[in-house]
Every structure is written in C-alpha cells, then in structure tokens.
Length: 317
Image (cartoon, helix red, strand yellow):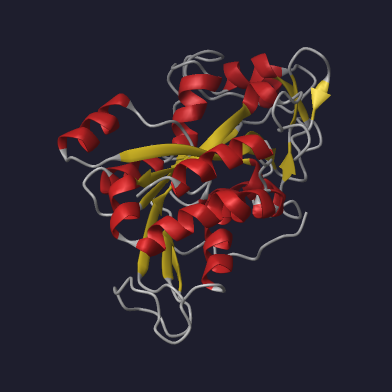
C-alpha cells in the first residue's frame, strides 16, 4: 500500500490551489474552472482519505478545499448549524443530529465512502499478545470486568503472559471510533478505568510505540501508515486469528465483526448554492473514493454503491 505522508500532528489541514482563495463560485472566465471554498470537518479516521481526495480535486479546479479533523462528534456540531459543507464521520448520523439539521432547516444526505477495520495495536517488543480472541478484547477493555481496581495485568488474560500492568489507550469522546468501540465492540459498557484517551491519533501511535505494555484501538489506516512503529493484533473471531488488512476488512471479509463503514455528510443546500461543493461531491464518488481508499488504509465500497451515490449528487439542482 502506498503511504501518504500526512502531517498528522496538525489539528486541521488546508490545501490551497494556485490562484484560489476567493469565495466567488463562478467559473473562471479564462479557463472555465470553478473557484471558491469547500469546508470539510469531522472524523479523524476519514481525514487521510478525504484530504488526499481534496488534494487531487484541487489539481483539477481552482478551489480551496479545507479539510479539518475535529472528530466525528465535534465536526457534526459545526455541520448541524451550517458552518461546514461536509461532515466526515466514522459512525452513522444520530437521531439528535438529524433533529438539529431539521430545526435549522438544513437539508442533508449521508453517504458511505469506504470501509474501515477497527484495529488493536501493540508495541513491537510485545511478542506475547500478538493474537487475542474477540472475547479477550471485550473483557480487558471493560471496567471492573477483570479486576475491581482495573489494574489489569497481561497475566490476567493468559497465565503464561508477563506479570506486568497493561496500559490502555484510545481516541477520546470527540471521535466516532470511540463511540464505535464503546457501542459495538464492548456493547455500551464502561471503558476500563484509567484508559488514556487522546484527541490526536498520531499521539496514540507514539504512545504505543514507546510503551512495551501499551495497547490502543483506532482505524486500520493509522496502523498501515505506521507499521514500522507499531504491531497490529490478530483477532480470533472463532475460526482462527485474522490480521486486519485491505482484503480482510472488505465487505463480508473474515474481519467483519470489527469492520465498519465510514461516511461523509453533504449539505444539499450548500451543493445547490455553491457549484464547487457539488463538483467536489461528484469527484468523491466518481473517482476519489475508489481510487484513494486503498492507498489511505480503507477497503473501497462496491462500484455499484459509489455509482448510486454519484447519481444522487448529480441529480441535485
């Protein structure tokens, strides 16, 4: 997989095409190109894919596509009040968010853009916990499940493992990945007490890379772009251990229990009012999502599903 060297320590990333910066959305008189701004915020998981799609789109148009990564929930707070044109998300839109959009008279559409595999990662020096069962993961990450004080040792999981305390890491509550892990993986139980939750995925990568007893969860793409620093845990779902990969996280793959779709939400109002917003949405589904999913750590959606999304965007008048 080709690795995109993104600046993952930045809170937001703005790509600017030459000669852009104006809010004017009219086609350029000389070249017929679009101009103006497109504002995208939301999921840190989806950020690598969407930022590369934006970069490629701006090679074609004189448009300023600003891609930020406040996190799914934080990004949705901006989107539902009309501050952004797109809201990327690593979980489906919530009923309360739909209600806020309706209250603010914002017409919106949720689209799947790719498939991601929730990945558990450990330090490369950890040569014992390279494989875990699905049940072991669910148990170790739940508060009070293994020990009342949550000072869980590796030997608490399997007696032959080291008698050393496990250090747990994960993304904070701003992120859809946090919500997916809590709601789906540990089935709405409380996360283990003392888990170190972070806003930046790059921070989580570095924490595990420096901690022999660390274990963290996040999207597959952040592992794939840092596999020289961290190790992915193989998960046994009942039929033997499975490593997360572009093949296994694909639709109906053997990693399906930890696979999820990731989304972008499009303001239909913005697409109607600003040609550059509609054009960017068309590019996502005509070329961008399929072309760059694998290169940024996602399994692409079926061609027919992307085509259906493209046709919907094209129908916006």
